[in-house]
Length: 261
Image (tube, rainbow, N blue to C red; front, top):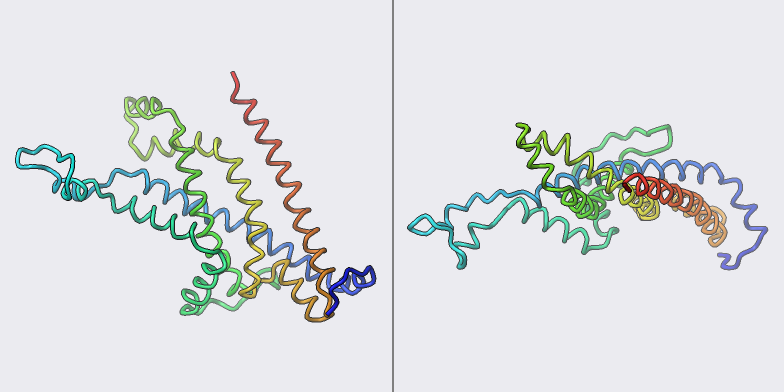
């Protein structure tokens, strides 16, 4: 197998341009769906972590009906199962490798589910693409959770008080007042997560997703050339990520100017 860069080897890569084109489409779709799923998961996790659901609060009351400040029963009374589950989810997924999570989702979860065998756009295998999206979406949700929680907490509490005085429920306040402002604040961070996912999505080729790295693997197996297809893949990832990051930075500056009074 050739381990040196030779211009003549790039000619061997050219016949596989269609594979790289399909890999590019798969990578972009994978990243888009991952961020969408990750945002939905992160929003639920953020609300769970910010909830005040303490079902055992009554156990923390003493015989006079006063709240205990310390002790085992006081800790039980303050226990929030929703926040605990959300925190456990975030810490576990942020503390384990993505490739391990991808393998667990693909082999451990979807290995027991008979997914449809059709192909999206004629070349994307749904049975491999969908588990990859779910695995990356779950991982992305763990990182976006803290971003969304910080965005929600950045909204002035006085607006919530004003919403209550107008008779809005907690859900209405969240939907019409808090979330629109929070999303505006965290939009650059979410867009940056999209760029990160473009690069991290390369890991899904290990479960057969036909992304850019899958095209590299196919060229390597057919031509016994490895460095040149890797350089092509590097150029494609650069052309995806660099302009996207610059566009994000541009809109971030525009949004920050709009906030100045």
